[in-house]
Figure 1 (cartoon, one colour):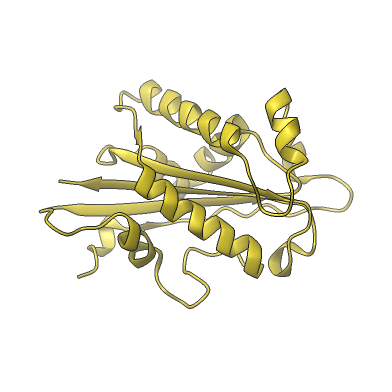
Figure 2: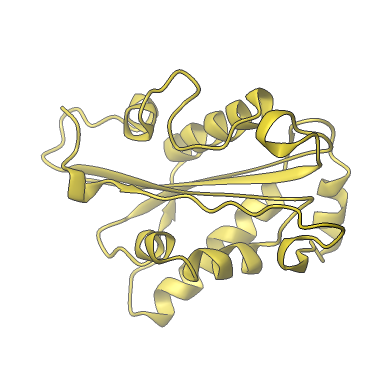
Length: 187
């Protein structure tokens, strides 16, 4: 049974290359991030994910909200979606076969045996890359993304950051970093 419509927060953020200027002048600045930029096709950027969790929890603390715990199952769901979007050249909450995001997440972050289950998702892509502080800042400037970041019922999050030197389809063959944040609560 699908979650109630008001439990599902479908959101997207999409940044594009505008002429020779990168959207919002995004750059990764840490030495670890510089190493990630050189990652092979579909390279995983664990340092960006860790920094993103810190940034999200700092914003939540500023708003009197409890921090989110990293959840491996949500991270697996987020990683599968980031990889699929990069490999197939699309950017959307629904999977390439049209499966709604909450069904995809439910496959990894089951709802069985719980009286309450709810998930949400934030997406972002940037060319060529983005750092955690900038990603959270962009999400905060978008009402639906801000709502997901500051939803008090969320208890867990799974984060996936993927960088590739040339992504097909919607990404126009450009180098991109794709972020997926899957939020959840079960109780």
